[in-house]
Length: 271
Length: 271
Image 1 (cartoon, rainbow over the protein chains, first blue to last red):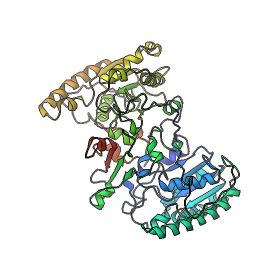
Image 2 (cartoon, each protein chain N blue to C red):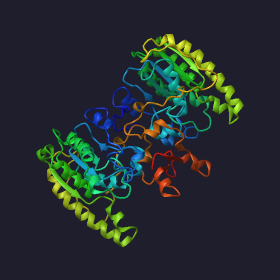
Image 3 (cartoon, each protein chain N blue to C red):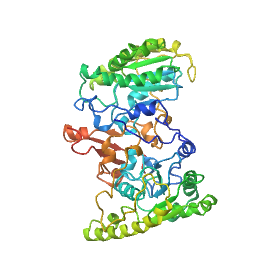
Image 4 (tube, rainbow over the protein chains, first blue to last red):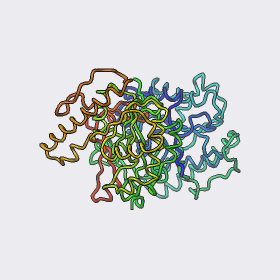
């Protein structure tokens, strides 16, 4: 059995970009979990991407696999891309290299070094490449896009752009209340349907062309496909990409919780 | 500040080798922690290696960083290589892709698929390359070497070969008894001194030529240098390569312990 994997950052300009990542002078450790290191991307860096996605920040599963959007948000995004026929030709970066701790001040978010480094990534992925559509997940991602779009590189970009509701916004906004969750999910899926109708005509070279099928009022079977093994570093076990909830931040106080990630192999794997 | 990193497995023949790794049909899950995925190597895959090291099997720190010999055993090995003037031009593989759970039966250790896959790695690293010396850490590594050496590729290899005591054998043999540990360490360092004297003349192209300085009777300052950042995947935080003991297998019973790795950022990093 062959296990495809993501070859990572061996090729320029990404090799140098990854070597040059900013630290806590740019991402203050009071607002970002810089202690876990930066996490850069997921998807194609070889120029084959047709869709670029901007996410927000990595969480604990992303910290372990060192790729972004691999948990529930990643699956929902994967389903959105699949509706466009994009099953492989995508690339994902986040607004922030490090996990947000609490909230981020505007002055930090718009700091020239933070924005400048991110803009280098966006230019590397968009200038002279074949991306036909850009998707932003949530407000921080939209802001990241606008800041790049205002640059000379950004002004020259002619592809489509759509900001959408962040994939897990229904959970974060409803805080465990089921009726609120159902309503927020319905609202999100309408928002996503509008985005699909804008992006579908713009993405002229999907991997697997298909008629556009919109979302219903709630998640349906097939709306949350697994993130492909080929998006992960070499040798990661199947449960890391097939399942969710295997990494948790645990600790008896805030500091210990911040310092700890516990990984538990899901039940049924070790017999 | 530039953060050098290991570019991994993007180039052939390693790309295909990594895609083709064997699973629990070759490494039975009763004897190996296959649930954490295979861990392949550390060091140079670009043909620049002058020394090849064969280790035994990965432990919990290796499982997180996805490179072998990064903990205490790795530091001691790093010191050994430094005495030869080899600070960069090395490559390390293990006898086993997965962490040993308990002990391994001879029939498993010598299984044709297990040996055959490992031999593909050894041939990829040694045939037509410029390795001048091979080092085996412990018995399983020596056995791995002998099984490759018996192949046509192995018979044609003309470099030096030295099996040495495994770097953490003093700890595993002394089981917490300080006097036994001191004696076992002294015995190991004598064994390593003999190996240095064999290997030093064979390694004709060190990175940083230096007079050979042998070990004393115990570990001295500088004998356990850090594993270089450039041996780790992109973006891993400094404490993962500068420190040890940050990954533990914890659990209230054997199964939960096997299923769990807890990572704790060392004290003093998050303030």
